[in-house]
Amino acid sequence: MSRQPYRSELGMISDVLQVAKESGRQGTIITTIARRANLSHYAATDKCQKLIDFGLMEAKSDKRSTFFVITEKGIHFFEELQRFTESMQAIRVRY
Image (tube, rainbow, N blue to C red; front, top):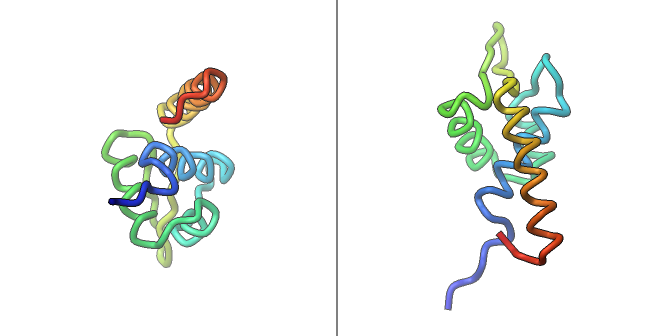
Protein backbone atom coordinates (compact mmCIF):
# COMPACT_ATOMS: atom_id res chain seq x y z
CA MET A 1 0.00 0.00 0.00
CA SER A 2 1.51 3.30 -1.06
CA ARG A 3 1.47 6.40 1.08
CA GLN A 4 -0.39 9.46 -0.07
CA PRO A 5 1.83 12.49 -0.54
CA TYR A 6 1.60 15.26 2.01
CA ARG A 7 0.77 17.73 -0.75
CA SER A 8 -0.25 17.40 -4.35
CA GLU A 9 1.97 18.66 -7.14
CA LEU A 10 -0.47 21.52 -7.54
CA GLY A 11 -0.18 22.33 -3.84
CA MET A 12 3.60 22.53 -4.10
CA ILE A 13 3.38 24.72 -7.22
CA SER A 14 0.96 26.99 -5.40
CA ASP A 15 3.36 27.33 -2.47
CA VAL A 16 6.28 28.20 -4.77
CA LEU A 17 4.19 30.83 -6.59
CA GLN A 18 3.06 32.30 -3.28
CA VAL A 19 6.66 32.71 -2.11
CA ALA A 20 7.63 34.30 -5.43
CA LYS A 21 4.63 36.63 -5.32
CA GLU A 22 5.42 37.72 -1.77
CA SER A 23 9.01 38.45 -2.84
CA GLY A 24 7.86 41.07 -5.33
CA ARG A 25 9.63 42.27 -8.46
CA GLN A 26 13.12 41.84 -6.98
CA GLY A 27 12.56 38.06 -6.76
CA THR A 28 14.16 35.61 -4.39
CA ILE A 29 16.81 32.92 -4.42
CA ILE A 30 16.06 29.20 -4.57
CA THR A 31 17.10 28.64 -0.95
CA THR A 32 14.39 31.01 0.26
CA ILE A 33 11.81 29.37 -1.98
CA ALA A 34 12.77 25.91 -0.73
CA ARG A 35 12.66 26.95 2.92
CA ARG A 36 9.41 28.94 2.81
CA ALA A 37 7.60 26.42 0.56
CA ASN A 38 8.87 23.53 2.71
CA LEU A 39 10.55 21.73 -0.19
CA SER A 40 13.97 20.21 -0.71
CA HIS A 41 16.40 22.25 -2.78
CA TYR A 42 16.04 19.75 -5.63
CA ALA A 43 12.21 19.82 -5.52
CA ALA A 44 12.14 23.63 -5.40
CA THR A 45 14.50 23.83 -8.38
CA ASP A 46 12.34 21.34 -10.31
CA LYS A 47 9.12 23.27 -9.59
CA CYS A 48 10.72 26.61 -10.51
CA GLN A 49 11.95 25.17 -13.81
CA LYS A 50 8.46 23.92 -14.65
CA LEU A 51 7.04 27.35 -13.85
CA ILE A 52 9.69 29.05 -16.00
CA ASP A 53 8.91 26.66 -18.89
CA PHE A 54 5.25 27.72 -18.74
CA GLY A 55 6.03 31.44 -18.47
CA LEU A 56 4.78 31.77 -14.89
CA MET A 57 8.21 32.69 -13.48
CA GLU A 58 11.48 34.11 -14.76
CA ALA A 59 15.05 33.52 -13.64
CA LYS A 60 17.29 36.59 -13.43
CA SER A 61 20.97 36.32 -12.64
CA ASP A 62 23.49 38.76 -11.29
CA LYS A 63 27.17 38.06 -10.70
CA ARG A 64 26.56 35.83 -7.66
CA SER A 65 22.99 34.55 -7.59
CA THR A 66 19.93 33.60 -9.59
CA PHE A 67 16.68 35.25 -8.55
CA PHE A 68 13.28 33.82 -9.35
CA VAL A 69 10.54 36.34 -10.15
CA ILE A 70 6.84 35.69 -10.73
CA THR A 71 5.49 37.03 -14.04
CA GLU A 72 2.17 38.78 -14.63
CA LYS A 73 0.90 35.52 -16.11
CA GLY A 74 2.08 33.76 -12.95
CA ILE A 75 0.25 36.22 -10.71
CA HIS A 76 -2.96 35.71 -12.68
CA PHE A 77 -2.54 31.90 -12.55
CA PHE A 78 -1.87 31.99 -8.80
CA GLU A 79 -4.96 34.10 -8.13
CA GLU A 80 -7.15 31.77 -10.23
CA LEU A 81 -5.65 28.77 -8.45
CA GLN A 82 -6.48 30.33 -5.08
CA ARG A 83 -10.10 30.84 -6.16
CA PHE A 84 -10.26 27.23 -7.36
CA THR A 85 -8.78 25.96 -4.09
CA GLU A 86 -11.29 27.95 -2.04
CA SER A 87 -14.14 26.53 -4.13
CA MET A 88 -12.88 22.97 -3.68
CA GLN A 89 -12.54 23.47 0.07
CA ALA A 90 -16.06 24.90 0.25
CA ILE A 91 -17.52 21.72 -1.24
CA ARG A 92 -15.01 19.55 0.65
CA VAL A 93 -13.18 18.10 -2.34
CA ARG A 94 -9.51 17.29 -1.90
CA TYR A 95 -7.53 18.02 -5.05
